[in-house]
Amino acid sequence: MLYANTFYNMRNFYLIVYDVVNNKRRSKIARHLEAVGERVQYSVFEVYLSEKEIKKLEKTLLGIVKNEEDSIRFYFLCATCKAKVKIAGKGVLTPAPNVTIV
Image (cartoon, rainbow, N blue to C red):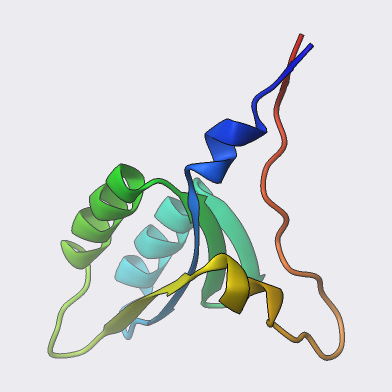
């Protein structure tokens, strides 16, 4: 049995948050993020992506937002920082995806 966790070890953990004024742009951004990560609050997503994937996502999302009106932030959390995340109340930190190849 081969475990593909090494595949996910090549991915980094990111927190992506946004504040978008326009409903259409906000929905479009949410759809892109829902496709690659977990929504942990209304405009906050946790994602595991490779460097190539995060660059592609950044390019896509930055093409949607209007810099004069909107804000989007990409926070890279290293393993040490991720381990220090504290959650009060409901919710858990999004676990790394597990894939088992048999």
